[in-house]
Image (tube, rainbow, N blue to C red; front, side):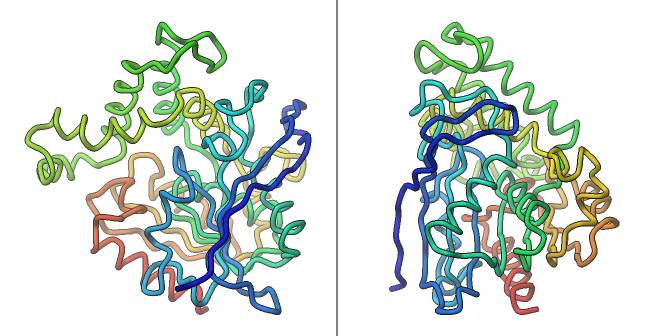
Length: 334
């Protein structure tokens, strides 16, 4: 069995891009494997939307996508996910904590807690992929490889439309007090939230093939069995805060690049592997195709799958998992 450790790193009062301050900022984290004496086997594996480090552990195993017997894997929990500083555990949580804010805090965690100043790879899915892209752009001299699974350098307008719909569902709840805070958990709104999410997370082809009936007796049974529990377990305020971060995510939205995406892409020194899903409705292959033109060292390898966004997190889909495992292992060996 490989070594593992969990902790919470106290960052103190953290200044944010917005000018606000995240008071008593805390980053939860978990590590897998052993840090080499040269500190050259580090893989950062940030969390995705609504996920915690526990939710992502399925791919960390000796025969998995990330091998803890070879790599020292560190998963920092995203601000807003309920383990790190979040609205659910911080009364004065700011209105917007950006992806840049999160990645800069993660950099402090790696440097101050582990004395790590070189990253062999950053691997991320969805919002985790956005963080991987940010790592490569914010710290071009530190990151050797970035593996972007179903993510993009900037949240596309169509993706923002989806996120605005989710925010509107929460804002329409009778329990909403304003600003993403709630008097009580809005159970009906969270059920609607889950059903909206289900329509985007899997592709039209996936539903046409009837795969939703593999574990359910009807469409309603599938939506209530497979989607409602995952979101009703979360605090609505946390989901709201993370959706705001997702919508605003942009590797060029900082003082380094002044919203010049081409400049931000060109600054990346890491070898970037782009792994979009061919039927993903959030992060389209076309987004990565456009980014590929501006990257110095990159490869685009779409995941040929009808599983939509879920192709990038295929815990119950062996074919897509094997595609990812092969692509990632090859990339980590180059």
